[in-house]
Image 1 (tube, one colour):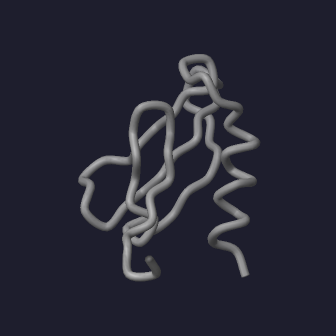
Image 2 (tube, helix red, strand yellow; image 1 turned 90 degrees about the vertical axis):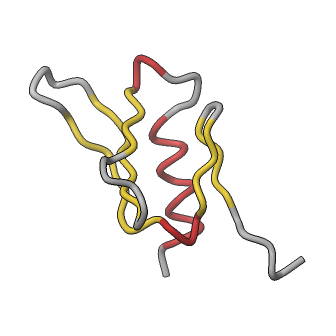
Length: 70
């Protein structure tokens, strides 16, 4: 089991945890907040806008911090 890849679920998407380079919460020019994720293989950031997702972005950020922060 320890050789299996680990994924983090964001709504209907799953992102390989080993490919995540950076993540955080940001605001766009309209002051809309979103959770962003940058991976090694994607050309663009994954953006999950607070108003468009069925999960709390602060809670998801905390979940990711629990996985990645030392």
